[in-house]
Length: 169
Image (tube, rainbow, N blue to C red):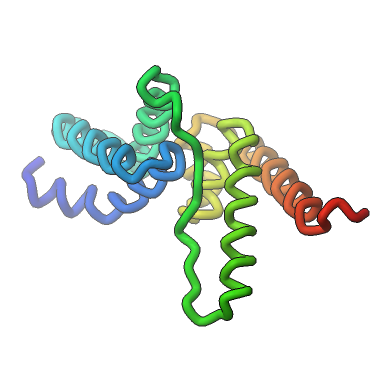
């Protein structure tokens, strides 16, 4: 595979690789390093890359595995999940503060989710992958993906609702 073929095949989803890495590793620098490592691994295996049915799914699986390995390593013991992609410049300051507070709460709630649920929420709700693609990436069946997503959303919804009720039930 020549460089032009590789670029046309891999570059359309490199931002998704970065966003997944950022979701898992938090640090922009760590996510950039992870993205570079994944792209380098893809380039080094570019002769085999044509064998895969879905190169994007393969890349996302590589990203997930690489990031989880980094999180397990000693040098990454201080990393956590955050989400800072939400911005809305056309709202009042109060609404912006409330929205940021809600995003912060969702991030805190997501930290408590099992690792698999975090990844599924990221892939489905942020990256907008189909259930079949997520199932392939995570080596699960679609039903298990749907169940995990449902449980994660329910947990997030319940904890966020409890937070916004300020303890009043």
